[in-house]
Structure formats: structure tokens, C-alpha cells
Length: 548
Image (cartoon, rainbow, N blue to C red; front, side, top):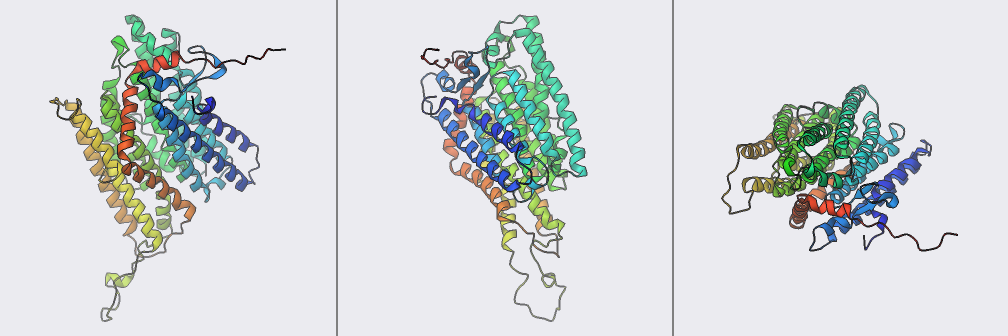
């Protein structure tokens, strides 16, 4: 890159890796010191992510390939496809920034109590960030597997953090399912390498068009097997039975950062679908689109039923993750870049919302566990006092704590339901407009039956979220008559306000953000830009000093 250090692309991987390694050697009794190091590292990661995002966003050229070529990093200075390649384009830069924006609030929230509930919380947290960032930035399938396993290994420990029967049970299921998914990953990668002789994504994309029919069949089989591994992580039906239980059993800060993990599967599927089976794939162009479309629709249906049936807030949030994943999969399955642009906006908005909701659930349920009367309504307000006594007031004013919690709960409900004026509505409106007008406004397009199903389910899933959140809100905030207001620390409520504030910022800056998403989707739909950028990336110049 021109204006930033050349190693900025690898920095989102190195910063959490070095932090996690250092924290392993610090005594667990020095938790305050470890917390300071962890927060400082998260701030550094956020600064790096912002710098990287601004750089990939500022590159302007008449040649599309130039947009991506500036973000190719050759580890060991080996050219592609022989060496390890990291690629920072508009999509991966967006995902790395989203990880940093989620990590800091989740980490701050954990400082109230959760980071003291088990050993090596901070190390596991940063190693997971390293794996997630590596999965977003890698340019070859082998290292995608490496980062995928690092992410999963750290997530196993984080899910079990805090112990308890429910976490152990959900954790064992989670580990078993993901080990099977890793096996599918290896089988799929092996088939692809056996056919093409390469695992570099750019090199692989340019070889697919020249395969003979027998090779093409094996390649598509390998891609389908590989896709299963990531569809498990993305939560597509019927591979998603483990997700609501695992996410609802995790501690609040862990569940908040887990909100990005399903998006790793979505990211990889979107990247490989548009790159490997896009316009340059020959006879394989469009492979998997129908499966994503139908699978996404089925996932929305399953998630919506779960949302309506959920009585516990944790499971409601878990099924909301599935609705989000199903919507994104169906949007990617349409193969329309304009729908994909709205889906990218929706992905960021829904991830921030669900992360905030997971943090909020613990604070709300804390009052229920304490037998809290969240409105502090008096018995006289319900007519059970002295009827002859004349009252000046009915009830008392809502405590400030519960006013804040109730406002945050209402905001989460509006965002999940996709009601105006917040970012959830803008995201869904953008997707629905693109689905109903695939060639643009004013064009006389014929909308397919599956497209109408997507439109109906997106609207109905929002209605289901509104019904469930309203029912949960009435039960939580109006259902009890006795108790005390839960004790909530500023360090716990501030991260929730920060995450919801980001969705408000997305609403205010919807125009520029949507233009960024549209340009990102346009470039994603041009595989030749990625291929040319990776395969022609120049090696770093060697020092001219003579070696003695």
C-alpha cells in the first residue's frame, strides 16, 4: 500500500496472536494487568482495522483490478500461487473492521465479572480474533483451514468458560459438530487440490474454466463437500440444530463475539461462490446458487418458527442468528450484486444488533433472577390497597436503570423486526427493492416464485421478531409485582449503548455506507479483478546492500 506501512495487511492477525501468546505467560492472579493489556490490544486492533478499511476504501482507479492489487501481501515474499497470500479488499476490510467493533464492547463487558470466571479468558479471546481475522484475510484454502481451526479451538474454551452443566453439554455438542465439519473441510479441499493442483483462490478461479467434464464433476463434488463445512458454521438448515443451544448457553460476552462466527461461514461462501463459480467459471458458473437460495429460505422458515416458539431470551437470540443467516444465504443465492449489497448492509446491522442483544439479556434476566419488579409498581396501583384511601398517584416512576434497559430492549426489537427508522429497516428495504427490481427501478422484470417467497419470508420473519420481542418485553418488564431493580454497572451497560449507537450511526450515514456496499458487491461479482490482483502482485524489493 502507498500511504500505510506494507505490513498493515498482516497486522490484524499479528496483534491478537502476539497478545494472546503474551497473556498466556502472565499469572492468572494478575487479572487487572491482563485486562489492561487485553483492552489496549483491542484498541490497537481497532485502529489497525480502521486504517485498513480506509485504505481499501480510498483506492480509486479506472481499472477494477487496482482496487484489490494494493491489498495483496506475500508472506515470505513468495509470489502467488507458490507462497502464502493475504488479501485485503473491500469485503475483507469490512469484515475485519466489524470484528474489531464487536471485540472491544464484548471485552469491556467481560471486565465486570466474566473474565474472572475461568483461566486464560483473555488469551482465548484474542486467539479467536486472530483466527477470525485470518479467515477473512487469507487468499488460499489451506490457510483458511488453519485459521478456521484456530478460531474453533479458541471458541471451544470460550464456550466452556464459566463452567456449568448447560455449558458443558452444549460445548460437547458444539465440539463434536465442528470436528465433523473440519473433516468435511479436509475432504473437500483434498478433492479440489487433486483436480486443480492448487489451493490459491485466485489461481484456482482461473483454472476452473479449462477443466474437462470429469474433472469438473470432481471439482464440484469437492466444492459441495467443502460448502457443507461452512454451511454448518453459517447455520443453514438442517445443519443448524446445535446453534441456538450453544449460543444461549455461552456467557454474555462470549455469545456477543460469537455473533461474528456465523458470518465467517457466510463470508467464505460468498467469496467462493462469486470467485470460483462466477462469470469466469465457464460451465460451472452459477454452481450452488440454487442450493443457497432454497437452503436460505428453509433456514428463514426454521429460524422464524424458533423465534415464535422461544420462551427464553437466550434461545430467542439464537434463533435470530439463524434468521439472519438464512436471509444472507438466500440473498447470496440470487446471484444479484444489488441484492448482495443490501445483504452486506443487513449483515453488519444484524450482527451489531444480535451482539448487543446477547449482552442485554444477562442484565434483563438478572432482575428476573432476583425477583425484580422492573417497574417498581406498587400493590395499590392494582387496586389491592385501601379503596377508601384517596391516592394522588398510580404507581411510581420507572427507575433509571430499567428505563435504560427497556429502551435498549425496544431498540433491539425494532432492529430485529426491521421497523423504521433504524438500520434494520433500511437493510431489508434495500434487499426487497433489489429482489423485486433485479434490473433496477423502472425495468419490466419478471419476479420468480422463489423470489416472492424470499420477500414474504423476510417480511414475515420481521413480524415474528416483533411479536416475540413484544411478548418477551411484556413478560420481562411488566410481569412481576414484587422485587428490586437489578444492579447494573456502567461498564456493563456502556458496551450495549455503544453497539446500538453504531446501528444508529449506520442509519444516519446510510447513503455513504450503502454506496460502499454496492461497490463492494460489484467488485465481488468481478472475479477477474481478484484473479489479476493476486496473480500479478509484485514482490517486495530486496535490499541492495552487499552481503559480506
